[in-house]
Length: 263
Image (cartoon, rainbow, N blue to C red):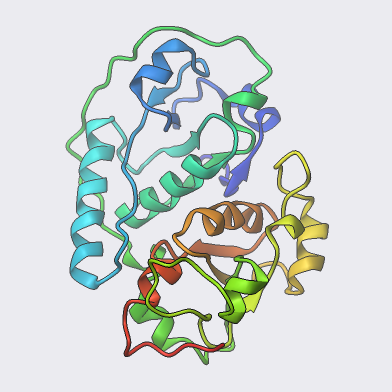
């Protein structure tokens, strides 16, 4: 049996493991960027972007589509899958959560991505070998508005708003949103509390001190449209939290008048 796979790994962890038979390294930047330079042995792995709305039918259909894309890239679900991007972590954490939605049980993000890779890069396109293995979607990996509505008073779940104080309070926001405010009971945290001035996640102890929750706590992060909260999810996972990103975020929540809000 292979060793456990942490949710976030760095180059020091990955480099000596390259070439291990049960390890697949996926480059989420796209096939053209991959051909111009990639981590040796990695393959392009493009799974798409999350849907802006999280109704059950949309999420189920998208999970099946992501599973199909994984199979087209030769991913079976039996390997340890490490994904990387150019370096900011946004594309990698989004892709990791989508792979989890499709049913992949062991996915990690490479911290620092290609920018922090210390070794030489390989050039040229990769030959992909599609597989027929079918993954079983894990819909719980992808927070939806229905889940959050049902769990607003769940003491086991912390909903973390990483927008600005003005957005959280409802004093301002994006004009495309019909309502302003925040999810009831959600806590606000600055992204700067999770990332340093270079854009790297702060140390685990520092992040846990900022969040104020013990390691292993369950957190769903959100922002306006899921980008800031995706990066927050990366830092939270690196600090040992069971963190997920609500991709619909306020952009979706504000459009449903039946959903409660606080100002």
